[in-house]
Length: 347
Image (cartoon, rainbow, N blue to C red):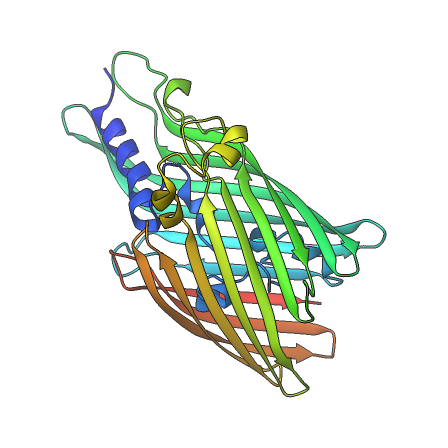
């Protein structure tokens, strides 16, 4: 007999990410969490400005300009005011290889904490941990002096609940696997000096299956684009303004057609409501201290509000640079803000 708790847990663990991160028809919504406290403090408006190792998520095309080795990591007790064992981790690096381009890798890990497993009679049978994991390999290259293109391949594992138990053998499980591609493009000085443009297509891949193929779920295929204007730059300070827009392109069609058909399934008003808008600004003083603020407008996910944060930068021996960033970003209904920390190192 199938373990009823398996199905209950599977439903809960699929629906919780959907309800707390954004309105979505897709599974593995952890792939849509924007890493980086620098971007988080600027309202997640970063796809055109990104110049650090987080380009592996935000815009692989922007990674093409890098000529150093960059390593970045982010840690967050996601919804820490509600769940004390729900964590999000992101680790990434990239490096430049002469005559080849930039190569890199990243790991995304989301744990939903420890769950109690019960049998069909409600008796406890120990505990298990639910988690999502994605591992990616990335490559980017400059097309011209002012433009770059990148692509990435990721393997996705979602382990939400153990196999069913009982006398009857079952193939039902709370584990799914899939893969996806990301494509990014970046253009500096678009139309006018100091105006940059970036766009990235994320999570282009087949559905993920937990129980059987008939009940498979789409990946959160997302198109993101942004603009960044460097208002002024001198030896003492820099001021930048950013705007991003993104939309999840998911419907009942196959992933390779939903890219085109998901723009008008439910009417114009509904589709425009699904577009997430992000605004941000950053002020840097003496390349030592950064102050940031932004605003998130996600009407469908009911996440609206201001974000803020800052960063400290330190250069060692003119070759090594360490960045520590902090952000408070709006989280929706369960808690007011998520607190995130990132560390970045380049040499």
